[in-house]
Image 1 (cartoon, helix red, strand yellow):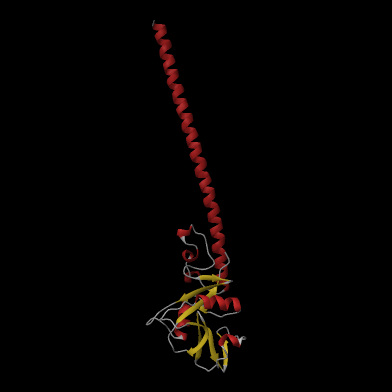
Image 2: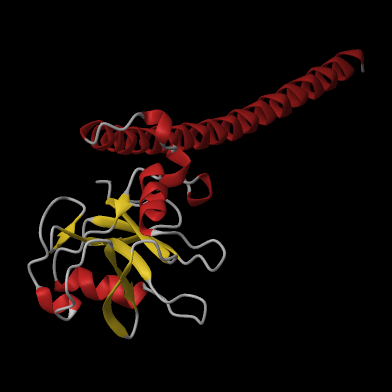
Length: 218
């Protein structure tokens, strides 16, 4: 009986050891699965980091070409955290059209500005009053120049200089039909508004305004 008891005891110990080995094997498999998941997650994060780094480098290159320091812009404005750091050509609040970003500042009285004041605000945003280059851009600007009873126009970067309509980049207005042959009298600037053509107004009037900047390559 003693020998039988010893055999039973050994069998019980062997069984317990087998159970422990089985449990350890299961734990090992679980750990391997978890390790693989962590590894895959890390690889995805590395890919996202690489893409984001490349996008930021491209953005920095664009800003450097425009002589703008990094301190003047925020990555969060172009690559918002809530959008999983997916970068956009325009910062939040700006609209993309062709290769430019636009900010329609639909200010109402008493927050509207003169032409010069509006331009200074645009410059503070590393932009300038918009310069329209073709019919497609003109239509975009007009369609987005929203109308309400307190807004009679949006300043754009066109004003009279020396008897000519001239853009802020120094070029002359080539399509006079855009201003309906209104005479270029010094001290006059131009506004855009949906459902009407451009209008000449005193640059000292207060209006809403439209800023434009180059879109980033992302």
